[in-house]
Image (tube, rainbow, N blue to C red):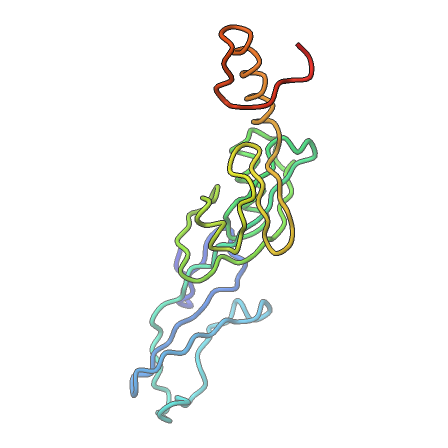
Amino acid sequence: MRSTTGKTSSPHSTGRSEYHFRCNGCGAEVVIVPSEDEATEDHRPGPYCEKCGAHESYALLRAAEPRFRLYWVETEDHDEDWFVVEEDEEAAAFFHEMAEGYDEDYAEASLVCELPVGVDAEAGWPSFEVLEACGANIVRRETPRVVEIGGRVYCEGALDNEINRVTDDLFEERDGSRPNRTKRGRIH
């Protein structure tokens, strides 16, 4: 939604939007990112263009949407832990709770990193391409997926893997196959 200050915001905004201005004199673009305590004020560059010296010549081009970030979201049972792309921790935890069927306020999100400029991602589960753009090393692509980012290793919740293992055990009893290629269960 667009506010009267020309700043673009959203229901989950952190208030750290960017304001883009262009000098009417020389065309120079200036980007202003207000600090959190300044987030409600109307922001303009200084009275003179730093490049050409024109006075009061800036026009607001656009106010950028708040940037998406990559969050690690986990729950106490760790059954469905995985990454979420969202604007803030609260939105990431809420998405995870709704998508995985948890009660509200059950998931906890922690910031992994800002999405790099130019990475096209939507809110929700990130693709491997988005993770790799954030510097991830995909250690394991199969369930449970394992990803290393910035020296920290993240392991997907184990519920999907357990379901696949039980399914393979049942198939193996029936026809000898293991369609999900999991290891045999401990108990037969």
